[in-house]
Length: 314
Image 1 (tube, rainbow, N blue to C red):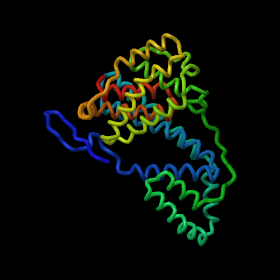
Image 2: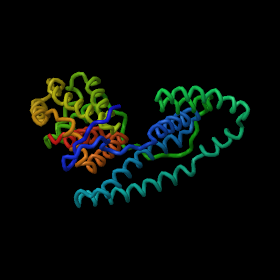
Image 3: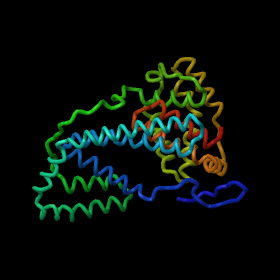
Image 4: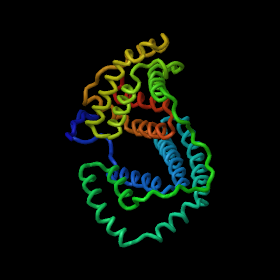
């Protein structure tokens, strides 16, 4: 990947990435894929329920920390403090509950009964397959291959705990794209217009994929990806009127207001904007990830739009 030239404050040109990167993303992706496949194959229902809820709380904690660290205003400090208190209580409840699961003893008994000679052979054969996937940058697939290779036999599902409901239900048709578009309209114009979006938006699957692809590109955080992701959003917003042509006149009018604020931005200007607003960009990343875990599609769309507006300054 090429490295873009960034014009920073003082008209000094530097060839550098404007955002920091975690050096362990590949390992994290592989571990999560291994964990999810292992728990599924082993039928450890309580640990699966625990991990889903822990991921949500982890994202809430990340937002709370960044709100307290960046402190853009008093409201954000209060929000971060309240969120952190709630997170601490949720962690306590989660770990207290999972401690009493029978999954720990069940899996321990299974591991004790392993044929270690066969297990050693499985390690040898699995290593080659996982290494090939890793070399091809398929990190999640490599993690899944390790779980399937070392623990190939599906086990009977087990669990003895009762869990509180998740903060979301299975999305109904059109709910996700309606949330995205409604959140985007709100962030651009301040108007809430989601009453009919789930049924009136055209080519919903294609539009949803376009938004997700653009967001995934932005999440990579490299200069080239920031430029590409914002450019992709620019094109999506410019053509959004065609997607809402069958919606209410209110929605059509609000989308026109969105498009009035959409314009191409020079690469150097975009990267300079990101540099100058780095803390806000990091907070927006955290909020997008939290909204994704909570299936809060409206706020995901709103924060995706906020990322675009901050990076482009349109």
